[in-house]
Structures are given as C-alpha cells and as structure tokens.
Length: 399
Image (cartoon, rainbow, N blue to C red; front, side):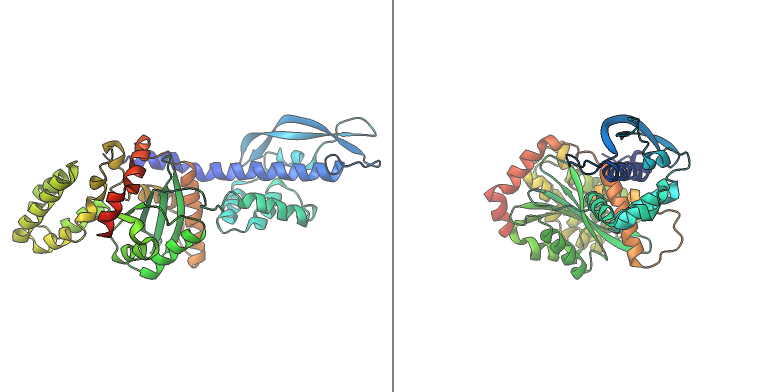
C-alpha cells in the first residue's frame, strides 16, 4: 500500500491558516470578556456604582485575514440609559482590515516559540486595540490560555507504538517522535535537531519524553529508521521493554545501494515477497536465503540485509492483523507529518539560527497534528497491545 502524499499535502496546506483563525477567535473572545469585566465588574460582584450590566450573548461576526468568522459576542446594557453599550473590541474586530494575515502569522509563530504574551500583544495590534488597554493581568491570563494549545503532558496516556525518524530539512536534520495511542490516535511527541546517528541527541529526545510523563514501564514498539545510536538510546531509556521494528523502506534503500541496477528488480521482488509472508519462520527463512544469494552477486548488500534482519520482522512475529501491521513497518507517518513543515517553509530563503528552525518545525508539526486521522487498522490496536504485553514476547526480547 502506498501513501497518497498529494492528498496529505492538500489536506495540510490550509492547516496553518485554520490554526491561526482558531487562535484569533480564542483571543478575540478573551479580549471581549476582559472588556465586559472592566465595564460591569466581575460576575456576581455587587457594585452599587456600576454603570453597565451583562445582557446575555448574541451571534456576531469578526474579520480574520479577510475572512468573516462567526463568534458569540457578549452584550452589555447601560444602567443609566437602559440601552446596549457597544463593545469597542467587537467594533474594531468587525472591520474589513482587522487582523491582517501577516499579524496572524506572527501569532502562530509566537505559539511555536512559547512567546504567549507576545501572541496577545500581536492579537491586540491585529484587531486595532491599543496595547495600553490590555492589562498586564489579562495578558498573563490569556497567555496561559494560549499555552494550552502548545504544551501538554504525556501522563496517563499509553503510546504502544512510537515512530522515530531523522528528517532532512533546512540544511539540518530533525529527529521526530510520533506516538500512536491505544485508540489509534496519532500525536507528535517531540523533536530534536540532530541525526539518529547522534547518540546524545536521541537520548536527549527520549529522556525529554520521559520527563513529560511518558511511561517506560510498559512494552512499547519502536519503529525506527535504523540509526545505531538511536537503537542504543532506546535500549538505555526503555531497557527490555522496547521492541524495535526497523523501517523496511530505509532497509530496502540501503540494500539497493549495493546491488547492480540490472539485478535489483529480482532482488526487490524477493525482498517484498519475504516481508509479505505472514508467518515469521517462513519470512525469516526467505530473507536468510536471499542473503545467501546476495553473497554471490553483491556481498555488501548481503551484509546490509543481515544487519538488523530480525528487527525487520518484529511486527510479523507479533502476528498483528495485516490491516494494522502494514502501517507499522515503515516510518512513513513521520515523513507525512513533516511534509506540512516543508510546505510551510518552502519560501524561507534565509534561516537565522537554530531557534528559528525550531519555531517553524514546531509550528508545522503542531499544525499537521490537527489534521491527523487515526492510524488505519486502529481496531486491531487491542490485539497489538495484548501481543506486546504477552510474557513470551518479553522473554524473546530479553533473550
């Protein structure tokens, strides 16, 4: 089965804009709430001198990047004239020129680098509200609200499957971790600038996930690109509770690099036939036979195949339903996620340091996550978890 990358790109193309619109709506609602409290005081507060009272809500419309967006606007009524008091924030946000696209982009970038108070200031500017009218307390409270869109713990969520791959981008490599939860949902867990050949980078990424609450006490299937340093880091952090599935796409590329072009079609067919075999012992026997054949025509290819041969069959050994298994033998989900980052940054000509790359990478991955669907074959996740937790699997892993 092949992944329709064109469809993925089309789905993700407008994701950043949607994220910005969601953020703009959230901030606009908070700013209107702040204005209502300044006019009417806190809810249920008894103030004999108040000049206005709350008067329910009504559907309204504001403008974000040239687009009319519906929003529930609060209403306020004067205690003196008994007439409605127009909210200044709502009036400014309704203008056609409110919240230009450039300001919207700054808000999203602010989220990516955790400059949440800067996000509020950008929003105030975008809607035409003077910064001086946005109180410090409101900025801090709103910044905390925005931070919920970016920061989250991993406690109390089991990720039976974790994909890790190094993606080349912007003249560097980003090591990205993506988890599959028990119900098949996908979540970007974290990333680090570096390569899967860099042991310290890989170990730092995994340790960060543990610090954020990821449970290392349960068996986990890691689908990786084959970097030796990454494999070693997984063992250090997870110990015997880690099962590793080598990405078959990466392994196939490595073997192909050592096989004469005229012989590759036959070798590729033998390789695909072995990996398609549902029985572990028969699949292993076919790969061993292929390695012996490669010894005669391409010794380096034979060595490449034997290196990590068993780990290309980990999912086969778990005897998972094919509908799910086929999506657990490559790191394609990470490559698909990163296509959003590439799309977002395709026009960036100059990178001003690593922090800029981190901001854009985080923005793109977070946006891609909002478009994720559950992994295909997710109904077989309980079967996978049962196989991971089976004592026989752990005994084989320890051996």
